[in-house]
Image (cartoon, rainbow, N blue to C red; front, top):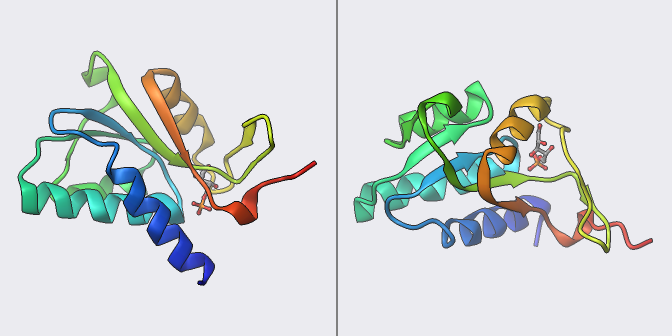
Length: 128
Ligand SMILES: O=C[C@H](O)[C@H](O)[C@H](O)COP(=O)(O)O
């Protein structure tokens, strides 16, 4: 399985954590791009009501084009769950992010979220 196929699988699996009515923080990066594609599919097919709070203009444009409502972080009183990519993680689940240059907004959205979910594949794990 290629790295891109793994990212698709991870992105799709993450969407299962999203429930109707949630305000969802949408991260940035190639893995999140797949997650947003699948979320858009659910919004269109199932008619679920989701508000997205994006960490970048790129993700906001993608989500809007897929029919996902986007609000700014100061337009919502909470964020239920943020799903974002990660660059590396160690065995204590301490991660490094920011490879896609959206780190400031990723931090702002994450600290306003009740829960966060980091998307990454086994190849990104640091085993020391
Ligand atoms: O600013 C970018 C983010 O931190 C990304 O979420 C991170 O770099 C992971 O990106 P990717 O899913 O493309 O590997």
